[in-house]
Length: 153
Image (cartoon, rainbow, N blue to C red):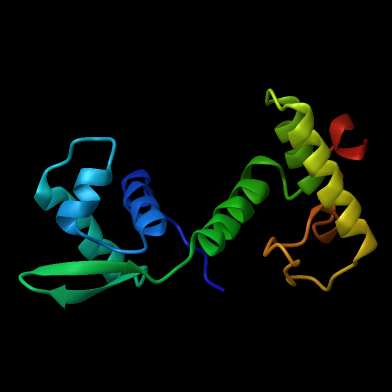
Protein backbone atom coordinates (compact mmCIF):
# COMPACT_ATOMS: atom_id res chain seq x y z
CA UNK A 1 0.00 0.00 0.00
CA UNK A 2 1.40 3.39 -0.94
CA UNK A 3 1.76 5.97 1.77
CA UNK A 4 -0.99 8.56 1.96
CA UNK A 5 0.27 12.02 2.72
CA UNK A 6 -1.93 15.07 3.12
CA UNK A 7 -0.98 18.68 3.61
CA UNK A 8 -2.67 20.31 6.60
CA UNK A 9 -5.22 21.97 4.31
CA UNK A 10 -5.92 18.75 2.43
CA UNK A 11 -6.47 16.97 5.73
CA UNK A 12 -8.94 19.67 6.79
CA UNK A 13 -11.01 19.07 3.66
CA UNK A 14 -10.72 15.28 3.86
CA UNK A 15 -11.95 15.43 7.46
CA UNK A 16 -15.10 17.19 6.27
CA UNK A 17 -15.65 14.57 3.56
CA UNK A 18 -15.08 11.72 6.02
CA UNK A 19 -17.58 13.18 8.49
CA UNK A 20 -20.23 14.04 5.90
CA UNK A 21 -19.60 11.23 3.41
CA UNK A 22 -19.53 13.72 0.53
CA UNK A 23 -19.82 17.40 -0.20
CA UNK A 24 -19.94 20.11 -2.81
CA UNK A 25 -17.32 22.84 -2.73
CA UNK A 26 -19.81 25.13 -0.99
CA UNK A 27 -20.73 22.48 1.62
CA UNK A 28 -17.11 21.67 2.37
CA UNK A 29 -16.25 25.36 2.59
CA UNK A 30 -19.12 25.97 5.02
CA UNK A 31 -18.07 23.03 7.24
CA UNK A 32 -14.47 24.23 7.61
CA UNK A 33 -13.38 26.12 10.72
CA UNK A 34 -11.20 28.47 8.68
CA UNK A 35 -12.77 30.91 6.24
CA UNK A 36 -11.38 30.02 2.84
CA UNK A 37 -12.22 31.37 -0.58
CA UNK A 38 -14.44 29.17 -2.73
CA UNK A 39 -11.64 28.92 -5.30
CA UNK A 40 -9.18 27.75 -2.64
CA UNK A 41 -11.47 24.92 -1.57
CA UNK A 42 -12.08 24.02 -5.22
CA UNK A 43 -8.35 23.95 -5.97
CA UNK A 44 -7.59 21.73 -2.97
CA UNK A 45 -10.40 19.32 -3.92
CA UNK A 46 -9.10 19.18 -7.50
CA UNK A 47 -5.61 18.45 -6.19
CA UNK A 48 -6.98 15.67 -3.98
CA UNK A 49 -8.76 14.25 -7.01
CA UNK A 50 -5.55 14.34 -9.09
CA UNK A 51 -3.81 12.43 -6.28
CA UNK A 52 -6.58 9.82 -6.33
CA UNK A 53 -7.94 10.56 -2.86
CA UNK A 54 -11.38 11.87 -3.93
CA UNK A 55 -13.69 11.60 -6.91
CA UNK A 56 -16.56 13.76 -8.06
CA UNK A 57 -20.00 13.35 -9.61
CA UNK A 58 -21.98 16.06 -11.33
CA UNK A 59 -24.91 17.29 -9.28
CA UNK A 60 -26.78 19.94 -11.19
CA UNK A 61 -24.33 22.75 -11.83
CA UNK A 62 -22.02 21.64 -9.01
CA UNK A 63 -19.74 18.71 -8.38
CA UNK A 64 -20.18 16.48 -5.33
CA UNK A 65 -16.89 15.12 -4.00
CA UNK A 66 -16.52 11.70 -2.34
CA UNK A 67 -13.52 10.37 -0.42
CA UNK A 68 -11.82 7.38 -2.06
CA UNK A 69 -9.53 6.68 0.87
CA UNK A 70 -10.89 6.08 4.34
CA UNK A 71 -9.82 7.90 7.46
CA UNK A 72 -8.52 4.63 8.94
CA UNK A 73 -6.22 3.93 6.00
CA UNK A 74 -4.96 7.51 5.99
CA UNK A 75 -4.43 7.27 9.76
CA UNK A 76 -2.46 4.04 9.36
CA UNK A 77 -0.19 5.73 6.85
CA UNK A 78 0.29 8.84 8.98
CA UNK A 79 0.90 6.81 12.12
CA UNK A 80 3.45 4.65 10.32
CA UNK A 81 5.33 7.80 9.23
CA UNK A 82 5.24 9.21 12.77
CA UNK A 83 6.34 5.89 14.23
CA UNK A 84 9.29 5.66 11.85
CA UNK A 85 10.40 9.29 11.95
CA UNK A 86 9.68 10.35 15.53
CA UNK A 87 10.00 7.10 17.49
CA UNK A 88 12.63 5.17 15.48
CA UNK A 89 10.08 2.50 14.61
CA UNK A 90 9.37 1.65 18.25
CA UNK A 91 5.68 1.21 18.99
CA UNK A 92 6.59 0.93 22.68
CA UNK A 93 8.15 4.42 22.63
CA UNK A 94 5.11 5.82 20.85
CA UNK A 95 2.78 4.20 23.38
CA UNK A 96 4.88 5.46 26.32
CA UNK A 97 4.79 8.98 24.86
CA UNK A 98 1.04 8.80 24.33
CA UNK A 99 0.32 7.59 27.85
CA UNK A 100 2.80 9.87 29.64
CA UNK A 101 2.17 12.98 27.56
CA UNK A 102 -1.61 13.16 27.89
CA UNK A 103 -4.12 13.80 30.64
CA UNK A 104 -5.94 10.49 30.16
CA UNK A 105 -8.81 9.61 32.44
CA UNK A 106 -9.13 6.21 34.09
CA UNK A 107 -11.70 5.00 31.54
CA UNK A 108 -9.32 5.71 28.62
CA UNK A 109 -6.45 3.96 30.38
CA UNK A 110 -8.68 0.96 31.16
CA UNK A 111 -9.74 0.81 27.49
CA UNK A 112 -6.08 0.85 26.42
CA UNK A 113 -5.36 -2.00 28.83
CA UNK A 114 -8.33 -3.96 27.41
CA UNK A 115 -7.02 -3.45 23.87
CA UNK A 116 -3.55 -4.62 24.86
CA UNK A 117 -4.94 -7.65 26.73
CA UNK A 118 -7.09 -8.56 23.73
CA UNK A 119 -4.14 -8.18 21.36
CA UNK A 120 -1.98 -10.44 23.54
CA UNK A 121 -4.70 -13.11 23.62
CA UNK A 122 -5.21 -13.12 19.84
CA UNK A 123 -1.92 -13.07 17.96
CA UNK A 124 -2.18 -11.89 14.36
CA UNK A 125 -0.09 -12.12 11.27
CA UNK A 126 1.82 -8.94 10.31
CA UNK A 127 -0.46 -6.44 8.59
CA UNK A 128 -3.67 -8.20 9.67
CA UNK A 129 -6.32 -5.98 11.24
CA UNK A 130 -8.14 -6.81 14.43
CA UNK A 131 -11.89 -7.05 14.89
CA UNK A 132 -11.98 -3.30 15.62
CA UNK A 133 -10.25 -2.52 12.30
CA UNK A 134 -7.04 -1.46 14.02
CA UNK A 135 -3.65 -2.43 12.74
CA UNK A 136 -1.60 -4.76 14.92
CA UNK A 137 -0.25 -3.22 18.08
CA UNK A 138 3.16 -2.91 19.70
CA UNK A 139 4.30 -6.50 19.28
CA UNK A 140 3.99 -6.23 15.49
CA UNK A 141 6.67 -3.55 15.29
CA UNK A 142 9.96 -4.64 16.78
CA UNK A 143 11.63 -2.33 19.25
CA UNK A 144 14.86 -1.35 17.53
CA UNK A 145 16.81 -0.85 20.72
CA UNK A 146 16.34 2.88 20.95
CA UNK A 147 17.99 3.10 24.34
CA UNK A 148 14.90 4.79 25.73
CA UNK A 149 14.15 3.28 29.16
CA UNK A 150 10.43 3.88 28.64
CA UNK A 151 10.53 1.68 25.53
CA UNK A 152 11.51 -1.40 27.50
CA UNK A 153 9.03 -1.01 30.37
